[in-house]
Image 1 (cartoon, one colour):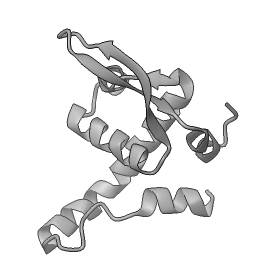
Image 2: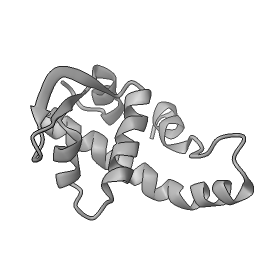
Image 3: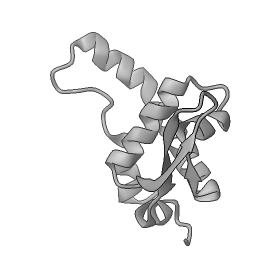
Image 4: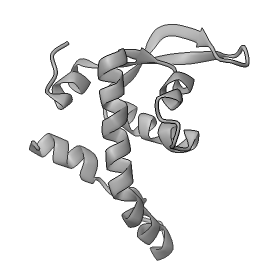
Length: 112
């Protein structure tokens, strides 16, 4: 694992102002969050473009809120971005289509 990869998945999952109980909960969640973020990034590396609904369908044993939060963390780190496309979800509402960035592929060690 490179220094960049370690820093991506080793950042705290709490704010500096959070109480001790939140810090404890974040510490317990971190290993699962790391794995989930990696799975999400790999899924985007394979599928290239997905809505949150499509992404969640690949991870049926995870809560949608956890998947979307992990996807958001990857977006905030520049590994995923919103594409110019929208898709309608099962309810007929438009959803953002997300895509992996060059940096996302580099992080995975994959070529575009």
